[in-house]
Amino acid sequence: MRQILLSSSLGLIFALFGTPLAIRVLIRRGFGQLIRDDGPTSHHTKRGTPTMGGAVLIIGTLLGYFGAHLVNWRPVTVSGLLVLFLMTGLGLVGFVDDYIKVAKQRSLGLRASAKVIGQLVAAVTFAILALHFPDGGGYTPASTDISFIRDTSLALGAVLFVVWAFVMIAGTSNGVNLTDGLDGLATGTSVMVFGSYVLIGIWQFGENCARSDAPPNCYEVRDPLDLAVVAAAIMGACFGFLWWNASPAKIFMGDTGSLALGGALAGLAILSRTELLLVLIGGLFVLIALSVIVQVGFFKLTRKRVFRMAPLQHHFELAGWGEVTIVIRFWIIAGLLVALGLGVFYAEWVAKAGS
Image 1 (cartoon, helix red, strand yellow):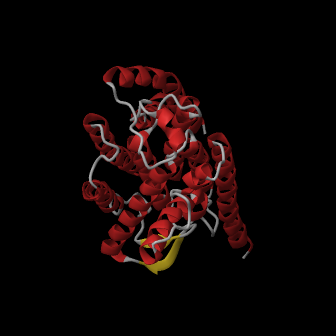
Image 2 (cartoon, rainbow, N blue to C red):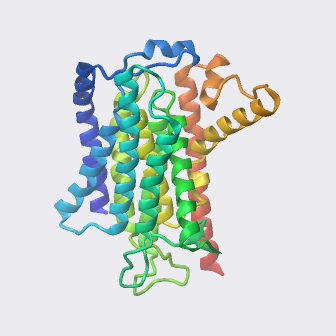
Image 3 (cartoon, helix red, strand yellow):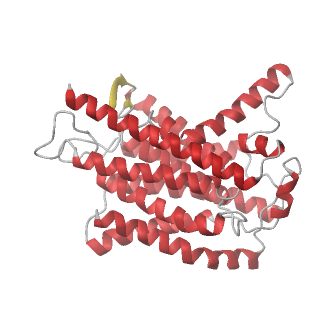
């Protein structure tokens, strides 16, 4: 528990005090956000706000995780390193995307195909490595079975698992990316979502099958406590960053941060065997991504729009809602979905304990 508290504290402190330095550096270099002309007109006032702040989130997470291990003198785990690798790899893809936007002064950065290739390389590498490195009990970081709250009987095999992992990672990272459209929306939601994975990791550690007194309904997760340490570092970094990212934002995370956070979230879900539960815990990201899919699909079929604009938060902006009102109400929805996901997680354990 001390390691989790230290990890989140270090991430928080670095992001809280390191973000102002990043703001000054980015302003000095002219790395300001470009605004699409077809978006809400209220966003034009944000033109020039420093972007690429996601680098602070990544560095804060790494410092929180490795600092906690160093202070407590405990070895890192393969599971923790894999999630950090995925987070950093996708963050690098986002960084290149952001850099092209500011360097070439255009609102679109990497071409879609290039971005997908970058996500593919990071996701496939993660998935292949996650099926190796068994511990003393024979558990590898990931399983080839599709999981809900624990592994199901639906086995994919190694090849299909890699495909499944890529779909999950690409979908989650793009979902967070689409959510990052209003000041503090994606950051505040991420605090709640990663906080839930701190609780899940702690619970799985206490009821883990590796323990000598493990109950019959134990969890077959390789490194649950270290996954909680990773989630705590990300949560702390998001808390610190939110201080500066809340409306009116002094800095944006950019694709650097949104792709990194989405990748880390998918990695935690895969390695904690809660892949399908992520649909509930990260429900706001799912809803916003679905709004884009529905908008695009319906327009191609009928040449009409379901929403005034997608992603969903911009629909409410054009309907006259204030930005802060939208963010707070979406945070409430995100919190309710996180609570529902945790409730389902705990209810499953109680049901198995009573059977």
